Each structure stands twice: as structure tokens, then as C-alpha cells.
Length: 219
Image 1 (spheres, rainbow, N blue to C red):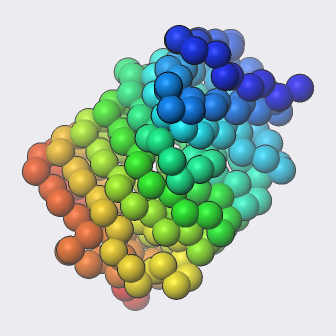
Image 2: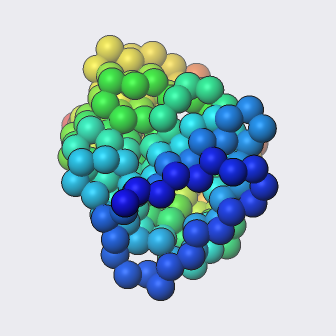
């Protein structure tokens, strides 16, 4: 069955890397939860591979792969409260289904307060309308911060690498801050690589490096 982490203190979820269809739900609440993922490999066709709410710190160890179904993010922030913080020395690949973000919100849901401090992070919408990191279709993203790590974010068709999901929020600014790390934002055809319509007002960069990649006719 599915696994739900609600206890206080630190929790470690470790597997041998074999694929499972079981999913993980982490409810940090206001007190917060710190969970280590080590060699976790989840594929699901109907739910989010990992869903978090409240204040959650994910520590990444080993190689982790999260693949979610249609309308669900690979690593899903299921509420608009609290902060999702990602850190560690391992790798995380998070693949959202159609109309959902790789890391961020599901279809038609907003998302805010995502912080990446470390790890090798790959986030991708595998369908259309979702961001690599940020919002799913019709989902506004706010306050995405990257302080470290190696981060590659790829939007689905019409989706942004980092930013809100496609629809009315495509025109609205997304607050994105980069203070460190190596960041690559890849637009889905014909979306913007980062922010809203590649607006410079969306991005504050004080450190690290940023590479953007978009199609010839992208916004």
C-alpha cells in the first residue's frame, strides 16, 4: 500500500533502487518533518509518487526516481502553506505527468515556497502545460529559490522550465531567486525558459550560474 510519513523527528526511507508502485505522503504540518530519500524508485500512473504538505525538508541520498501519473507532479507540493526544502548529496529525478510540474503543483493548483539547497536535481513535465519546477496547468508559482546544487528544469509543451503553469498565469510574474548552484532552465515548445514570458522582473540572481534554453519561436 501507500506510505504516509507523519511522525515528528527524522525519518529515512531507503530501498535497493528497485521500482515500486507504492507512493509516499509526507505531512510536515507547522512543526515540520525531515525525511531522507535513499535510492527510492517510484512509478505510478494515477497519483503523485511523493506528495508533501506543510514544512518538509527532503534530504536526497543515492539515486532517486519519481514518476507520476497524469495531472500529478513527480514531487508534489500538495498545499500552498509551508516550505518544501530539498538538500543532500544524492540525485533526484522528478517527472510530472501531463499538465503537472516535475517538482511543484498538480493540475489547477497553485504552489509557493520551494527551496533547493543541494543535490543533483532533474525536474521535468513529461506532457504539456506544466513547468519543470513550479506550477501545473493553470497553477501559479511563487517564491522558488535555488541556493545550491545542480538543477535542470524542463517544461512540458507550452510549459516553462521554472515558473507558473500554462494558462492565465503564464502572463504573471513568478518570484525566482538564485543565490548559488548550477541551474539550467529548458523551455517546453514554445514556453519561456524561466519566469513569465522570460520577463527579467521575475528573477533575482546573486550567485551561481544560469543557462537558459528555448526553442526558436519560444516566448
